[in-house]
Amino acid sequence: MNPELVGRDFPPTAPYLVGREKVREFARAVFATDPQHTDPDAARALGYADVVAPPTFAMVVQDLTLQQLLAEPGSGIVLERTVHAEQRFRYTRPIVAGDELTGRLQVTGIRPFGKGAMVTSEAEITDADGAHVVTATSVLLIGGEDQ
Amino acid sequence: MTALEIGAVIAERTVQLTRESLVRYAGASGDFNPIHYRDDVAARVGLPGVLAHGMLTMGLAVETIVPWLGDAGRIVEYGVRFTRPVVVDADAGAEVTVVAKVGAVDDDTARIDLTVTAAETTVLGKAQVRVRLGG
Image (cartoon, helix red, strand yellow):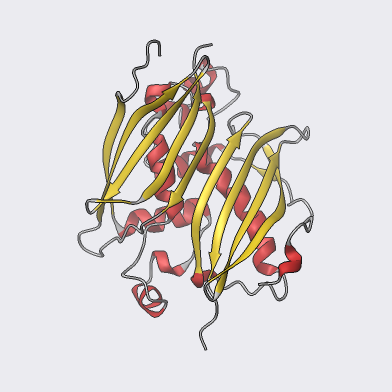
């Protein structure tokens, strides 16, 4: 694991347009039963423009930022040997279908752990107006290669 | 949501996960790590079997309280530690049980503590949701 990744500012990800059917698909995948996730009228009754994404949907955008990290030459990260240790989301507002979201990754900490490393990263997710939506913080345990 | 009592159970449910659930979550989330659907890869990297995505467990756990909340926008913060993996057997699948209790209350927020278990083991640590009350 390259310790120089700490503090590096990665470029913002390409805008991700949140689709209504994607929200419905994700809601079904996490066994979400509340109609605000699938029925636009139920979401509008709560004051939202369209269906409300389940809270952990933010991971879809965070993942785009983590892929930047995985693609980093010499990052030393092998997906199969990566264990998700902790996850946190801090919300200003929920994600709603129609949002155009951008993620900006920062690696905030790397510390050795066994043969590998414990990597903390933060993805700040903002909307088309640049307003904060959610910050997603991950702690990944990156396993060392065998041999 | 008035007069929340510390320790009161506000929601609970059991979800039956199958390999199909994992493939569905992989597609919906874009997380195609093969340890979530290939026994050979899981075995090669020393896992006890094919595992549910931690984010699937985290996601279904918080959804347990959304009908009670009425509005997912009340959630201010949600964090978990992935302490034990959920092994999803090819035939039997896995049962994940979620119990949501009031952990703490202050003027305008409450902390909801989620106890999430599979195979009689707690799989998420410090699974806490901070929610906005009122208005």
